[in-house]
Image (cartoon, rainbow, N blue to C red; front, side):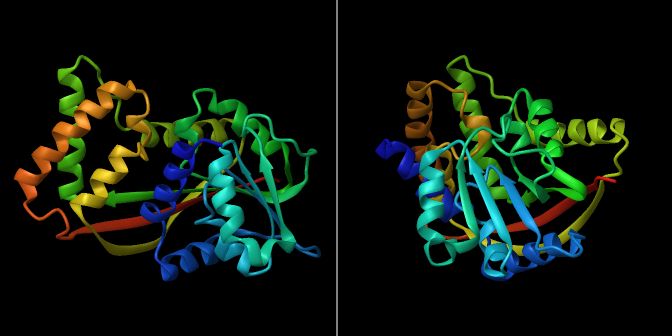
Length: 263
């Protein structure tokens, strides 16, 4: 496993983690959406990452299948879950080809994944295939408002554009709408609600690190050399724009959960 993959996995774990109380509220929202009767629920998470959704649910005793195609992410997850692995199964696999039998799990959790898959209908079909009758597809996502971070991202995008590369933004939101439409065409009735809202603080230095390590999907199609040049220029711009890169700015966040139940 490359050191670059491992470094990015640890950066993701630090910079994309939920505060403990928020993670607990999200776990409660997911648990309340399950309606498994007469048997112990088993959950499958597609794109589990380093476990920010999974660990609070595992701590509550759920059987958990943690799937990811990135071995570094799974390794960080394994280390964090070392003391509670009795009911956990790790799967290094692609969400578009889930190595499980049909009707195997009570809930499939998908958080910030659909927009990473150009052929997402295949992953959606697989998610529905492994759900038991009465099981639930549980889609989650964050909505973030952070004016300072938006300025950094917009400046990065402009610097990349100066080198002749356009960056598509907003794919995540469009994909959520496409998936909802597909679910309705299948006769399902997805219902969305806000689970929790909270405020965090982040520094310009942390925001720069998130961009540098390509933790946002919109950065990943830019050639390495272009990205590195843009980041070098962005760091200079940020120092002039913000002064102290360790002075925190507020970030407003909300987490939404969309539930679609099979009949």
